[in-house]
Amino acid sequence: MKTPWWFLRKTPLALILWPLSVIYYMLSRLVFGVRKIGAYKSRRPVVCVGNIFAGGVGKTPIVRAIAQELGAPVVMRGYKKCAATGNIGDEATMLGRAGLQVHTGNRKSNVRLLDSQDDDSPIVMDDGFQNPRIKKDISILVFDERLGLGNGFVLPAGPLREPVGAVRRADAIIIIKANGGRVRKINLPAEIPVFYAKNQTISPYGGTTRLAAFAGIGYPKKFFSALSNVVYKKSFADHYQYTPEDIEKLKKAAEKRKAKLVTTEKDWVRLPEDVQNEIKYARLETVIEDRFYDWLKEKLRCRH
Image (cartoon, rainbow, N blue to C red; front, side, top):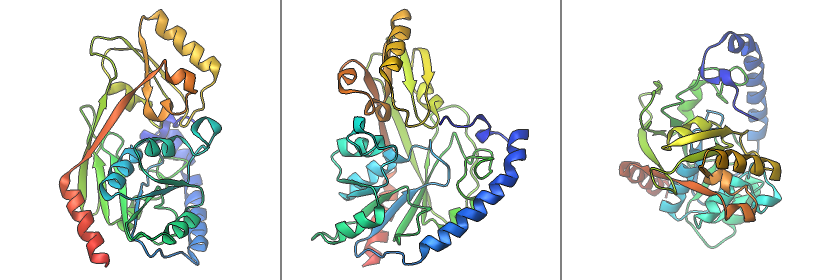
């Protein structure tokens, strides 16, 4: 589905939906408590990278950067698995393309499997902050300066999976800096260390090339604004599975404007192989400040 338009603003509709948010939160806490019974404790350090903002903050590149730095395998659900991505999901495919060992499906079972291996390196758990079935040694939350906390409401009135107070369960926070544009203030507990990351979107074409950009991610506007000379934009639902008809329409739109089609890597891995040879993606480079890795490695040392 596409991100609801009211998630970033306190609109009358958001206020109307607020009672449903209360019900959603109460039910989610009940489920959380039940699932917490019998939580599994890995013999290997588990580093959880999650969020309380429902998608679109750019967590996958952060997971990739941390896993590469630690030389760690990644366990994740594998959202929107399909045959087009080898049945593991677009985010898992992205991580696998980076040379990482990725395990999708039941995260508890996969952590048990990794425990059986002769390896003591950390395990990176993607998007598990709301998953109590596995005990985490370190929990890291990711935010985006441009999105902040949205309208501050919990689903479905707003984009938050939990109230802001849930941040206190985290050991650290990574904020992805905005490259220009509006910055939303994020009020966070002073006792939790905050680190910063920077994203750079690198176009596969020269700066004068006319671009026809399309994306099926949480907040496509972030992608479009990171490119230059965009003459056509098309948004799709997050994790959208492209059809031949979609591709044909996109090609016609680009040809009409004498532009080159470009998309995100997350979208590109969902395209059929023959189309991947025709359409390029803009590479996203994420750099987390060095002092974060100093903090993380010290925390891991203290575990032993």
